[in-house]
Length: 167
Image (cartoon, rainbow, N blue to C red):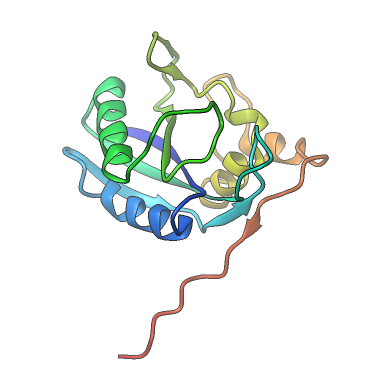
């Protein structure tokens, strides 16, 4: 089994519902099991500012899929959520990023591992640090140090847990 880390985000059509549903659906991917997931976080958009704030989270998966096969499954899940690829960093119903896959370094036209922007994004590092505070990246940098270095960026705001009605 390989360990994969997935970044989730949405800012359209009830974003928290898209992210929560996608977290559940990650556990249904072939040869894959969701092991952990962060809280949901509200973050300002990166890129065009004239769009709604995002809801973000990070999940940890165990999988027998290859990185590219997992990417195919993630993109199919995005499509099921009505993802339209338009403006770069624009609004979307669901964005799933393969952040890390074991300690692999990979550069292909479709996929770069580790994700090239993850170490500069509080909306990735903060939820990642929540569920894996001692995680060390393939290049030797640790999540705690990278998160602390983002002090000049507005941190994501943790959303309160979903309260279920009494049965």
